[in-house]
Image: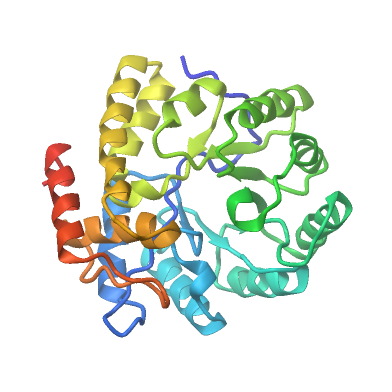
Length: 312
């Protein structure tokens, strides 16, 4: 059977997609498309949603846009699943402002990275997370994203914060599988009760075997039902089904390699948005400025992959 370490009572586990933000041709929030996207997730049986994360293009939004997106998501979800909110910014005071705004809208938890731009070390990062936790009345999640913030949260830091009640869980998007496995073992040994979620798309099966409590994959926007099936199969100990689902999802992930001459979110998030447009879920594949949208040739390549994995 699925053998993840025990979590604290009420911990958020399972499939928690990092919700994309559909945009109009003018770059504003497309509420109708957002409603369809959220409905797709809920119909698939996801366990929660993570709004204003990297897949949601949070780094490109001003405060007005962030508040509008989160207000709409919380309203559309209407309590059917917990909503986590990203409070992503350079330093503590800005992060805290985003976090407070999010809690006023009724989110179930706040997700924050280490501070960035200004150089920080272990002491500053520790103060950052403890300051946030002390000021919030909802659970705080640590978002380990070194590719963007240029700091890897250490196993020792995370376990200490978990043991001290600073954080409720970790979204691990570090890509460091050795570190994640060490984190699972150390967290279990310390009895932190933290929920440990992988941000992987193509090795979720391996993360679950290592003891992950759930997944936050951007690709789940395109196929939430596939990740829910994988999660439920892992919990039932049906590892043959887990492998089959992961293989199909790995084939689907090839959409991010279709774009040419694009990097980062323009390629990855751009491919996800284009796939959702091809599936009729969102109206456009418009990206936040300055990122270009994928063109018709790229869209045709993505459509072929969607057909190949049985999504159209």
